[in-house]
Image 1 (tube, one colour):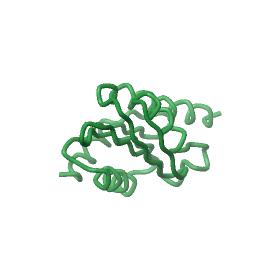
Image 2 (cartoon, one colour):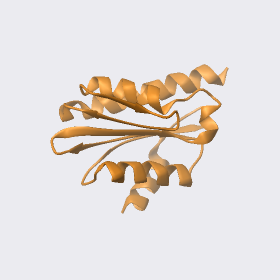
Image 3 (tube, one colour):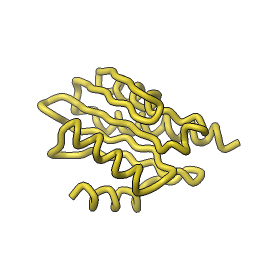
Image 4 (cartoon, helix red, strand yellow):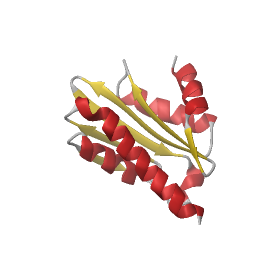
Length: 129
């Protein structure tokens, strides 16, 4: 279930200066599913920065989200999603706390997740001062 997956991802998440960075390639889901997944994660744990991706109908769907307490630290889901979408040949955006994008190249989903994670990592380290 989504809840079980969320729990294990939280346990396995990279932690940078107290912030969990959760990146995940989801399967058998749609855009609504990605958004629900991000929302469930944010309800379970904080502070958390999330990037989830899925291949849907041969294309890439990406959703990035950060918990509200990270907005004060300069983390921005839109920055993350732009970096990730660029890798898979797409674009998108949204709010600082939730952003979505699409892309054309599912073969690069793993690289896209890493690109997005490094945006979060850099922002967290910059705010750690």
